Length: 97
Image (cartoon, rainbow, N blue to C red; front, top):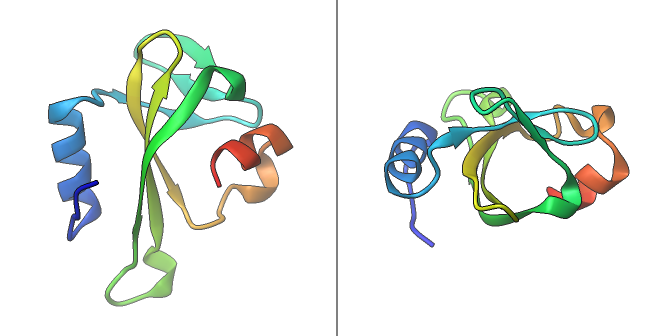
């Protein structure tokens, strides 16, 4: 796993090298708007996870997930630390730990 100094550096590198799609977090699944698909917890795995802390504020903390689905779709999910924790299913919470 590579080390990145910034979230934008990590996103740019991962998108260029294997993870071209953007995922959005929904309560029961991940959504890829560009492909118009939903991927449920049993159908994806987290390949890599990166944590970033803001220099000026702890409110700037975020997590970047590099995710691959069972059908070969690879993409990225960006989440603020715990921001969506209460809005997702238990299966999604376990998968994104």
